[in-house]
Image 1: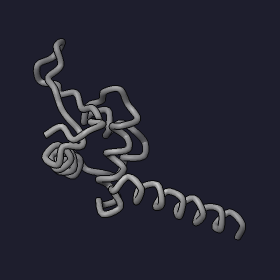
Image 2 (image 1 turned 120 degrees about the vertical axis):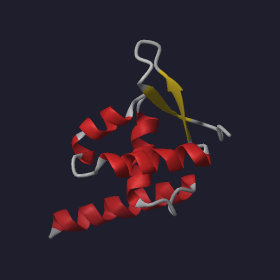
Image 3 (image 1 turned 30 degrees about the vertical axis):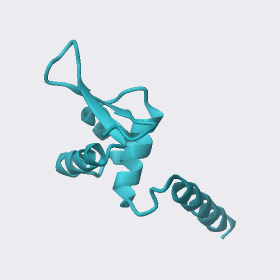
Length: 97
């Protein structure tokens, strides 16, 4: 029971932090992808999908979420220099639009 109580306290703290950042209205997967991208210097959709946390999330869902986050301007993308098919994603401290 104590473990569940601690887990709920962590969820409350996470919600408070997300509310302070203004992302509490994003879906769980949108928040997770945004938080993953912000934790990396740069990443790709493939790297997101390889992470164990996202193992049950489909490519189409991640593509949709990335497109939304790009459109709102909280992440940005740029083409890789080594492979023109690859797009690197990174977090925008201030709105990228």
